[in-house]
Every structure is written in C-alpha cells, then in structure tokens.
Length: 179
Length: 219
Image (cartoon, chains in turn orange, yellow):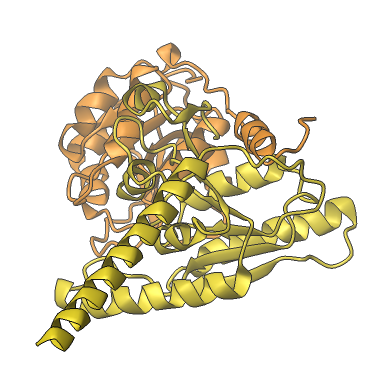
C-alpha cells in the first residue's frame, strides 16, 4: 500500500466519493486550502470529487505550475469503480458499499464520518476498521490533520470475508445436507 | 336482568377463550421459532428476499451467491417502492445465474412495497402510511406465502417477517455496518423471537446477544 511520497511527473489522484448521499461538509473540507496544501505536500497531483446530491460546488482548477493540486468534480458516474482503480488515495463517506469496494481494491482509504446524520451508526464500522488498521477515520474538521499524520505503510490489507458460514447454518436449519 | 347477566357472562367467556387460544398459539409459535424443521427438505423452498438500499443489497447478493439456488426457488425479491437500485442489482444477479448455469428462464419475481415512513416524513402522515404499508405487506405475504424469508436490515422487512412467523423460516443477517449495536429492525426481530436464525457479523454483538450466531464478515 502507499507509494513514494515525492514522485515527480507522475499522476497521483485523490478520489473523493460521497456515494448517493448529500455530504457537503466533506466536499467543503477537501476544497479548503489546508487540505489541498497537505495533499500536494504528500505528493498528490489531482483531486477528483464525486459530490453526489450535495449543493456545495468546489472550485475547478487545472494543474498549476506552482505545484498546486488540479481539482475536478462531478455529481454521479456509472464508473465509480474506474475512478477508484485509478486513485492513489480514496477519501470516502462512511457507507459500507464504498468502504468495502475500496478495501477490495487495496487502495489507501480515509473514511470521513458525516456527523449531521441523525442515526449515526455508520461511524461504528469506520472506527472498527480503523482500529484494525485497514483505514483511517476522520471528521470533516480534522481531515487535514489526519492526512498530515497518516502513514500509509502501516495500513494492513483487508481480506474479504464470505457468506459461507451463514449459508451452512441456513442449509442445516432447513434440513439440507451441507456441501 | 338475568338475561343481561347471561349476556355479560357469554361475552366474558368468549373473550377469555379467545385470549387463551391466542396465548397458546403465541407460545406454540415461540416454541417452534428457532427449532430446525424436522423433515428433511428435498423440495425447493419458495423464498422471499427483502432488499435494502446501498450496502444492504450488496451483502444480500453475497449471501445468495453462495446458497444453492436450486434449493431456494422460486425467488421473490421485494424492495421499497422508492428504491429502484436494489431491484436492479438483484436482476443483475439473477441474470448472472442464467448465464452461469444456463438455467432456462429465471424463476425470480421482483416486487416493490410501500414504506411505512420515508426519511423526513412527518409523524402524523406516517400513521396513515404505516397502516398502508402493513396492509400491503399482508397482501404480498398472502400472495407469495414464502417458506423462507431472507432479510438483512431495512425497516420494510418488519411487517413481512412478523407475518412470516406463521408459515416461513425467517433468517435475519444484521448488516456489517452494525458493530456495537443492533439496528432497530434487528433488535425487534431478536427480542420478539421472530427470526428463526439471527446472524451478526461482529463478535461484540454476539456477546451482547447470545442467541445470535456470529458468522464473520460477509464483505
């Protein structure tokens, strides 16, 4: 996981995704100067934002000569998987779909918890996986600190589970032989 | 006067008998819940799959992909009326089965159900929509009469599971997103003994809910 910090001339994309939700706080956070500066300091060159149903529109920016980040955004895309694949770092909302899709592609991941949600059970999953060192967990207001402090080499790969144990129990319960 | 007394007595007797019958029925169902069906199955079982949005459907498809689909047929998929994505995903899954096994035509059917409450809906109007949702669930269950109900979270599954207690084996898989606390649907189905088997994906939850089976992560 991770990679060299200061590869020159290479495209290193940060992909931000909010899924089908509305998560302006995250889009705003990645659009702040401190987060963008921190990202370019860590060697990232492009910032691509999938902003979903949010209303906050980030400022587009082409690749600056002063080493500033190129910024692009879109609302929805049918090819989220391609964006994830081409990314060197993924910053995602806490939905389990986005989290596991990213982990399966072995991409370094920062999950940002949406504190505005009423029933905020989503942070449970992100915190548990952060404790197991599969990803970093952040909030919109401390995202730049997490980016500054993260050590991608220390993240552990996630081994996807499967539903075989459930299938076995269901089959047994219904009187089918396991095989 | 005596006639009135008689009348009172017969009403009370009627009520007492009804309550007793209901209690016996309830105890019987609770006793049977969680007991494996004794007869060895050889016939395929009609199966109702309740889908939820986003990650829920992905987890359900993961489960379906390891179940022997010839045992769980015909299959009925239900999602909330406002959720088109989930039925679309289950269609993709069914199509992949047809391609893989060359099964002649899929036996799957896809349906939508009214939701009792949309996000942000006021509580006053939700009384009416809840009644509508329950009536709709009852109608669907009478039509399908599934032998197996598979569900993993959305609130839509509650009326279907409650009605399913009569003639179905109900399997509930708590979502992977639930690490420390059960969802409201999960808690209801667990506490009321409605699910015949209850699965959780994190050991912390199993420690709090000993009747649940810990099965590790599905994703």
